[in-house]
Image (cartoon, rainbow, N blue to C red; front, side, top):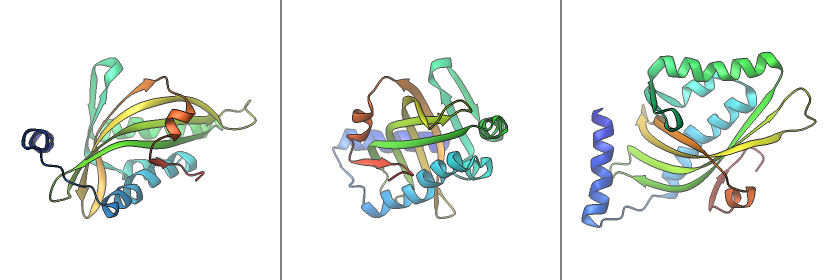
Length: 176
C-alpha cells in the first residue's frame, strides 16, 4: 500500500508542480528487457514460471470489468494456470504490447505505463494464429534486485484496429 501511495504522490507532483521527467531510452530498454520480452516469451513458450518471474510477489491485479482485486501468489498461480491449460489443450498463445505512455520517478525505481495489448491464439482447428482481441492496460513497475517487475496491473477489452495498435511509437512483438 505504501508503494501505491508513493506512486500516486509522485504522479500528483508531476501534475501539480509542472515538472516533466524525461524517460530515458536506457530505462525504456531495461523495462522492455526485464518485463515485456519475457512476458511475451512466457506466452509463446507456455511457460508459467517465466510469467510469474516478471511479476512482483506483492502484485496487485485489478479486474476492472468485475470490480475485483486479486493479489500475490493466489493471483500468480491462477494466471500461470492459464498457460498450463493452454498447453494441455494443445493451443498456442501470443501477446504483443503497444506502449502509449510512460512516467517515472526521479530515482528511476518506479514507473507507470499505459498501452494496448493484442492477444492471439491458435486452437486445434486453426491453421494459424488468430487475433482474439485487444485490451487497454495500466501497469505499475518497480525495481526489485535491479530488475523491473510488475506490481500493479489492470486492463479492459477495447475495440481498436490493428492499425491503431501498430500506430504507436513503441510496439513490442516477438514477430518484430
